[in-house]
Amino acid sequence: MLQDDKILVGKGENPVYLLPQMANRHGLIAGATGTGKTVTLKVLAEGLSDLGVPVFLADIKGDVGGTALPGALNDKITERLNTVGVDPAAYTPTGYPCRFWDVFGKGGIPVRATVTDVGPLLLSRLLGLTEAQYGVLNIVFRVADDNGWELIDFKDLRAMLAYVGEHRKDYVTTYGNVTTQSVGAIQRALLALEEDGAETFFGEPQLDIQDWMQPGPDGRGTINILHCVELAQKPLLYATFMLWMLSELYETLPEVGDAAKPKLVFFFDEAHMLFADAPKALVDKVVQVVKLIRSKGVGIFFITQTPSDIPDEVLAQLNNRVQHALRAYTPAEQKAVRTAAQSFRANPNFKTEDAIGSMGTGVALVSMLDEEGVPTVVEQATICPPRSSLNALDAATRALLTANDALYAKYKDAVDDRSAYEILDEQNQAEAAEKAEEEAEKAAEAEAKAQAKAEREAERERKAQYKAMGLDSQGRSPLERSLQKATKSTVRSVGRNLGRSITRGLLGNTNKTVRNAAGTFAGNIVSDLLGNLF
Ligand SMILES: Nc1ncnc2c1ncn2[C@@H]1O[C@H](COP(=O)(O)OP(=O)(O)OP(=O)(O)O)[C@@H](O)[C@H]1O
Ligand SMILES: [Mg+2]
Image (cartoon, rainbow, N blue to C red; front, side, top):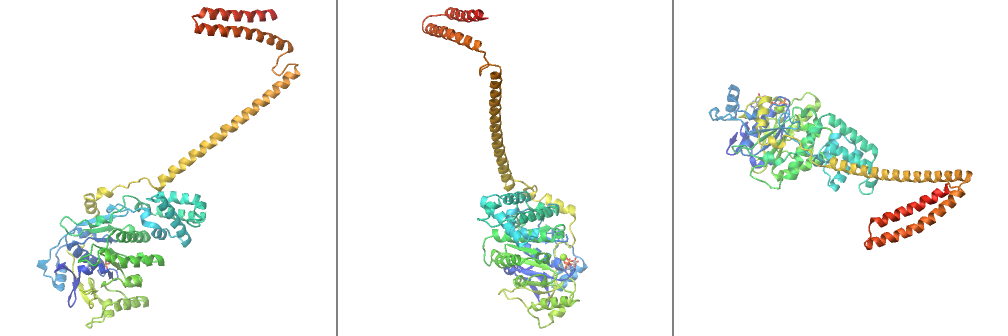
């Protein structure tokens, strides 16, 4: 709910507001299960949308979709409105311009990213690689990048791994060592990930983050809801995906400095999934992104059960805080409560630590940044009711909204353009054809050689046989040889006459008769001679 262009979050002794100009200073919504975190998120998202600020949030349990539908004024809501100082008559239930997304393409518009874009660091974590294997994956990406071969999907990555594995000797000096064991391990990890269904996320058309910024038809900010009931079952994929989107926002948005309101606010639910077992390199990257993204006009709100789920360096960046009730049974939980309490600027009217354990549903300790950027004294505030429905959205309505969404056609079908797999496949085929041609040439050469050898041998054998029969090398008896000699000299002299006469005839005015007569004449001589001999 807006009051004087400020988002009314709730009310303790005083109303507490999220100031639009401070929404890029990040925030935290923490609390035990069922204490009201998701509804607080809805209240903030609605207020931002009312200000024309687009929002992105992950719907882990499938209970945020109702934001598309108007809420209803019932006794509970009326009581809550009275507590927060809003006249129930002024409460106008409304649905918000929601757009649904889904990595698996079932509960919303498909969201995809290319392997190249996700990059080796996030992918390495997703694949559960060791340092050494990460090094090899890095080389694979660099070889692909340096050649301009895009890695769109897993098919491309697989082809690229095989290629670098085969040509690893060529890359030792320029890129570093690549072992077949590492390549094999990455290939196996990739296979496991494929079997886990992660493949659908990697592809094109890649999500254009700018599409989140498209306002709703009435100018309100679009509430982009990532439907991730299924994705949340795969914590690493979820974390990878959310981190990719954060880095994408960071990479694509221009610097805006401190603006009157943010460009986008990103709610990162179940944030503990992001940091569980995260390597230091990754946490460092997240800290860096969280610090720097603020100047791009992006606010990030982490939502988790206890603040201790989030690394201290990240926590230190979260200035707008809503702490719902925490349970403190074990010593570790008690410590977490103490730490959470200490993070607030104390209110002399109550003990923060005691309040954390005793607050009811939809009540929270709230401290937001004031106009000066200073955290307000903590209030034990009843949180506003949302204006949209608290119910979950049924799958049929969500599917209908998605099918009618103007962006659906753009992302509906995956496209598989020419990329590393196709390029390497063509290269392999060309190489194979060249090899086959060379081999065929070699085989023909060898065959010709063998044939010549066989002919020589046959000739030698024939000559030996002639010799044994008393014949000359051409198989003639002495009589045949002298007879042939005599025939040849006669034919030669006749032939010479024939040649002359034809030539002359052609130049002069001679006709066939002369040639025929000559031919007959020559033929007669030969047969006469032969007749005389036999
Ligand atoms: N501000 C509020 N206004 C109206 N009802 C609320 C409010 N906060 C909480 N509730 C009620 O409490 C219920 C539980 O709240 P919510 O779903 O936000 O808890 P949660 O902390 O997100 O739980 P979980 O950890 O299980 O996701 C809501 O369904 C709603 O009925
Ligand atoms: Mg919740």
